[in-house]
Amino acid sequence: KLDPAFALAWARLSCAQSSSYWLHDSSPAQLAAAKDAADHALALDPNLPETHLALGYYRYYGQLDFTGGLEEFQQAEKGLPNNVDITNAIAFIQRRVGHWEEAIDRFRRVVELDPRNTNAYNSLAQTYSALRRFPEALATLDRVLAWEPTNADALGEKARALWATGDLQAVEALLANPGIEPRVSGLGFSVRGVQASFQHRYATAIEIFSSAVATETTRGEPSGALKLPLGVIQLRAGDVAAARATFQSAVQEIQRELEKIGPDSNPAAGTHATLGWVYAGLGEAASAIAEGQKAMAMWPTSKYPWNGPAIEEVMAGIYALLGDADHAIPILKRLLQTTYGGAITPALLRLDPMWDQIRNDPRFQELAAVKKP
Image (tube, rainbow, N blue to C red; front, side, top):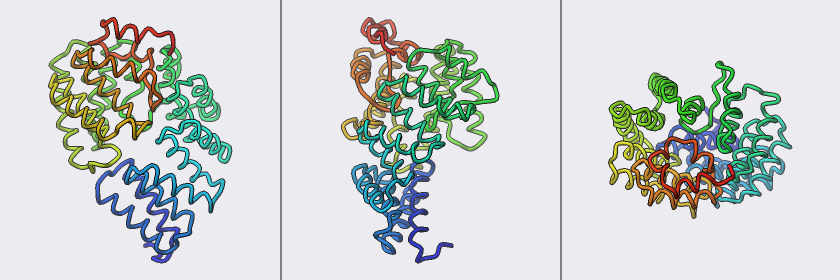
């Protein structure tokens, strides 16, 4: 039980509750718990820096109010300068609002203050990759791997950066140890499965993704997002019946997931976008486009420069699965010039089977052939 007059404990509890809402439990009840703890901290000690950190995370994670969250973090920093947690929070929120160089400076500051903070190095590398500064991203990740060669997050981020440059051979070297499973934080896919699909080893990719789906199902975790690449690879392998069954199962699971999460929560837009992609796999164009457009309305690029373009990329993927090059290609052309998390590159257009249904269009080939990553 908390000491009811211990403001610091309430502030830390609120931070933990907000983080849980952002990452795990996007229910209104979880958000209310975060707010209640923050309100207690504020009432007990409104000048405590950790109170402002808690309020910042509530606004950032709970309300998607990046400007308000940044103001609270900056207020916290006045009381605790050079605090790693506060500096890290400011870095993330600067990135959310598209202040790329400020975010890079802040992540660099975090690793100066905490030289073995692997999460900060990975976040710095993600930011470099968003700017398509892949040599800097790879060098940053190699610093982590120099002292933690089996760091799954660093290996996963390195695989993403290498895919973006088209270097499948270098990714293969990362996967040489079968006992290490690289992962990409927050994204529901298997690095080994993606690598196999990019190499057109569809039977292997299907086996890997099927195993990943089974593992998540056994754990009681949602696997709808994993079923999307599985269904696409089944299509590419020519097993239309299996793909259709996979997509239909994914629709049901994603719809159940949407019933659990708050409509204004962090995962809502991405979940609607994934549902649209799955509908596209089923050929249900009207439902697919409606879900994609709903997701874009929730995360407009003008307001959410880190995530918004990624939702637009899903919209392009929806059109591509529907064989609609006329709508997909203008989106891709714009995104190739846009900074965002997980930014598309010509190499990814060349590699990813997701684009196969529009691959023969000369306009697509022109985008994919640009002599950059």
